[in-house]
Length: 199
Image 1 (cartoon, one colour):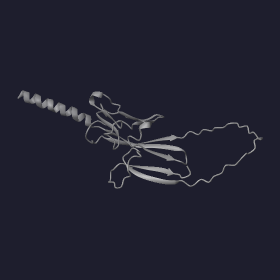
Image 2: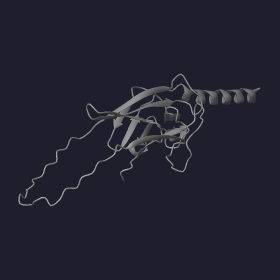
Image 3: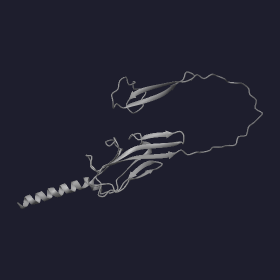
Image 4: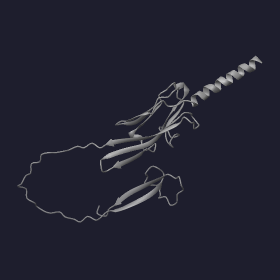
């Protein structure tokens, strides 16, 4: 009888420990840093964080998530991605020609279980706006007025022809044949090119 009570107590304690990680939650809104080289998001949790911080729909892609186990003993989960790698994790980049701004947008999810969706999971839309630097370049030129024109070179340039090819995959490869039929969910690459006969 005593051994059954001990086994029951051990199983109950183990269940309590496992359930405690799922009952975890974020203490406040995560801090986002939009730096010149990377985008970083960092949060604080009530208890030791066990789960994953990842880019929405890119959890299983290498470099698009940060996995935390109970052994990491961290209450400050964070994820960062280098700006040179934004295409790998599906971050959106939008340019605004009116005010010279570049916006990088994504959704980051804090998942409190390594495999399941829990009630504590939270997602955050991250908008990083970068302002294009305005630079003025000036130089002094001394014009020489005694150079006479020896000849005139003139030609007529033809209007270039713009074409587009849709190929399967995510990497531009000129060896690939154009996609003739596709299915919903297929990865496609639109390649725009200019043909000019004037050389």
